[in-house]
Length: 194
Image (cartoon, rainbow, N blue to C red; front, side):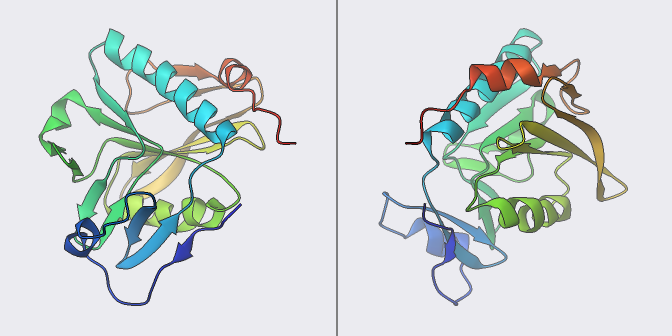
């Protein structure tokens, strides 16, 4: 599997980003660095789809907002444009929704770890999402069948909920949400990698 890589050393902005003419490659800009992001594997896609469905079902039932999935640009500022695996925007925060993506901080972002994104998701993106005051950040680890829910308190992420295997997680920003990991990871069994 290809790893994420910095494309070049110049400072990139959103205006540079929209001029890229290669639609076959996904990119993100983190602190002005253009990063090529490889396509996710099938197991990642299955998990993303199933998690999005679980979240969408709850969010729609209670009219809490909207959930989106990658690829979708989340434009935090001119030098930070990311494509989280899943993004929740609450009903009270809909002003950030634009036809070309999301401009500003959503209420929740979800990153599903892969070998190529492990460091970036656990460190760079966590710091970035904290900097832009995104209220909640989930790190989903398929290898360990776990989810970490970080909630912003006093401008710093604190572990709010954690579960692995057969446990359940809760969200501070999606009212009433309780997610059973056994059900999620069972639904998303990976395809044979052989």
